[in-house]
Image (cartoon, rainbow, N blue to C red; front, side, top):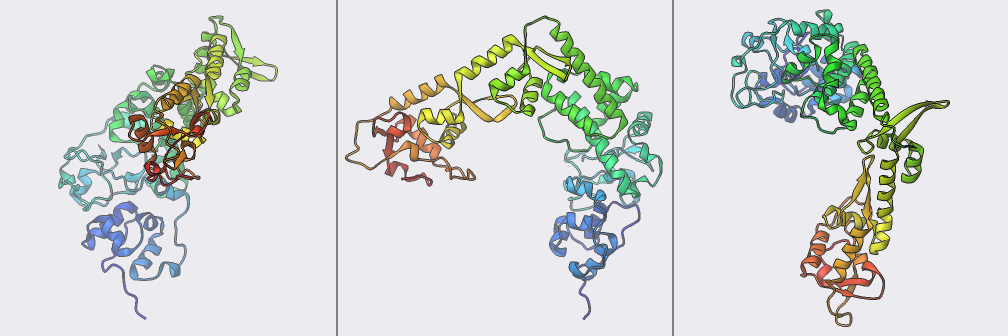
Length: 476
């Protein structure tokens, strides 16, 4: 039975060509509007086509089913790092290469690539006409989706600082064909890019809390990077130590964790220097001779595990801290005044379950009240998912409900205790959109509430069943 090809025009991929650029070129040669239309025609997502070997993809496009394609079907695991990190669609271009009709080299897609080696100009990652990021999801190879011809974009010549940057941070690029050995190079490339991304974000003003850094360097980062490496080697550490972000413990902790996970010698030495700075700063602060309290007392008071206690110690909550060398290792100390402040805070607040007992409802209802802004929650810096509530706020909230009690009409209407009206289903995957409206209606007076019995809180307060019928999770 003859095969039915999935595409009539199937050009070969050049040896040094970017795999993402090949898919875009494949779509264009078949008169398709970019990768999205190619995906619809072929029936495979771009990530799958990128993970296949050139031979396997060629067989598939000829009409062979994916299950009967001759092995190997997929490339090695290490070479798929950009696919896993969803960086495969990001595109860099050289206007000179496009003008000459050259295929995009594979090294353009690597995390730390900033220049075209053939023309010695900076690679562009944004369209200057629409200011949008260039991606391989555009409809045509040589034009931005706004219509701008990429060959006509302005070019910027590189300077010697870029040579210094590559010699320091990317020594594996000394060989001209370094990018063909993806198995051994890509892990180093991603690790260095992630650490450098963390440093750039740390010294810039655009930092936001995040769980991990995207290992990608943009052309707009180059002025910051250039200042970090020149003069070398003092400028890298000095720029971080001079940053205003150094007083932010959360930012510094995240930076140190990222540098510690890097295998690059430069970044590990930098982490060692920053660790030394932190210890020296704490010794200087403790020289004020404030009365100190062992961190173990904090852990016992707050009922925290070791990780949360350490996070609290490193957070901005404690301004006066000290680390001492003891016979069993380092011991941690905090200001007695700040410890007493924490002790008072715990005395004046209650946890989620205790708040639910006082109000007479479920813990889920307390979370719902906090979510809609009717009951303010407070948190420890190291436990952002464990709310606490001031007892005074809870008492004020209960009194505000009791002031809205209407005349007793229990004999005339079927009343449902408010404690039985849940804001969400049991597994918390779906919140009832009508529950906030009912609570707001109680405060506005449009949903009357009545005294059912002498029980405290919501167990003794109810509303008419008809007024609660829109709450889909009502338990009668």
